[in-house]
Length: 51
Image 1 (cartoon, rainbow, N blue to C red):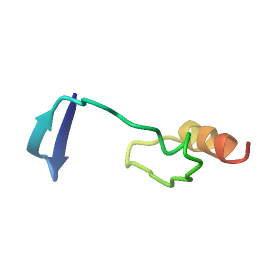
Image 2: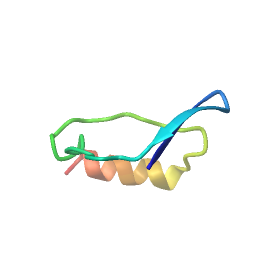
Image 3: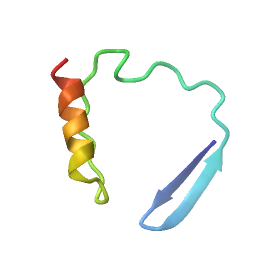
């Protein structure tokens, strides 16, 4: 199930019928960072990117 928000406002929700392949399984690099991300998350991401 997915819920979409923009600036604290709920835009809608829906069930996920088919998730498809992940960006990781497709070999795509991502640089997504959230405000509440701590340094241990950053270290984990760096380890994954360097494999």
